Amino acid sequence: MLDTLSKLRSLSLCLTEVPSTGRSDVQEKQKTIKMKPDKNIKVQVHYMAANKPFEADEPPETTVGQLKATVLNAFGLKEGGGKTYPLFNKKEELTNPSQTLGEIAGDKHDLNLKLEEVLIQG
Image 1 (cartoon, rainbow, N blue to C red):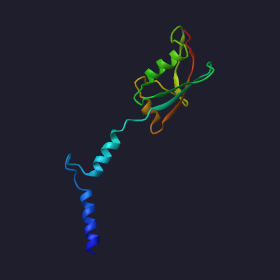
Image 2: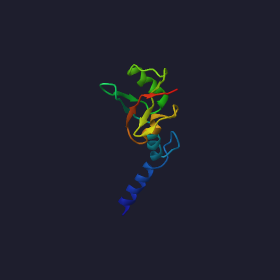
Image 3: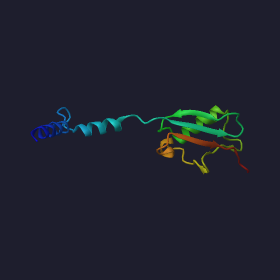
Image 4: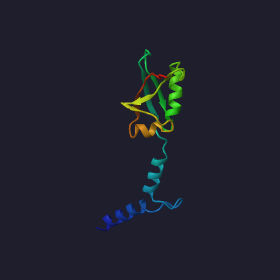
């Protein structure tokens, strides 16, 4: 019985506050996990007129506007002159250029997007 009590005291000392920070060992581990950088998102953008899709690993804080500019450049496209190139996630058009890829991907680490060419009449 005394041996068990001794082990419990030892265990409880391991879970008490860490002298340097005043936080428990568990809190320190949680803090370390939260501070790890987010993984990049594997982005694939398909464009019907291209032989192969655009592929890149992007940080989750990359915005739709930044990605679109990179994709248009990679495919040698420019908006204007009666053409626009919207990006789609599944069937939903990505209309907010400030939205981040992390917001779109959620807990996934990949995005499979589509770039379409739209002719503007007028």
